[in-house]
Image (spheres, rainbow, N blue to C red):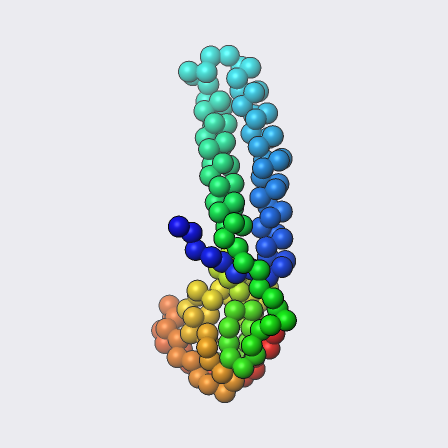
Length: 157
């Protein structure tokens, strides 16, 4: 049984687009590679054929994984986000109690996490530690660098 994952509209669209690309272009490319390798003669000693068949297996596994993700995906309505406490899709500004540095993150599903874009997973240590916190509360979070304290400065959608 697969777990249900929550996505923004953009995140789910990106997932569906990747799946469609693999099913069409990806499968066509692999089929062409197998056909070319088959045309080279004896399959028992044909490394290109073996490599193409391995690539086909990997592609089909990736397609199955994406199909599973899409079938268990739930779309989050960004208009119904409760900004009284930190939850998925919250845009939260936190301040490091030790050095005073502030940073703003949007909490998203594991599959949509992108640190460069300021999106962290609700499954990450910081994401887990912030869930359910209210503005002004301090979250003590165990990170690989040790325990850190963050104050929730602001919560938005």
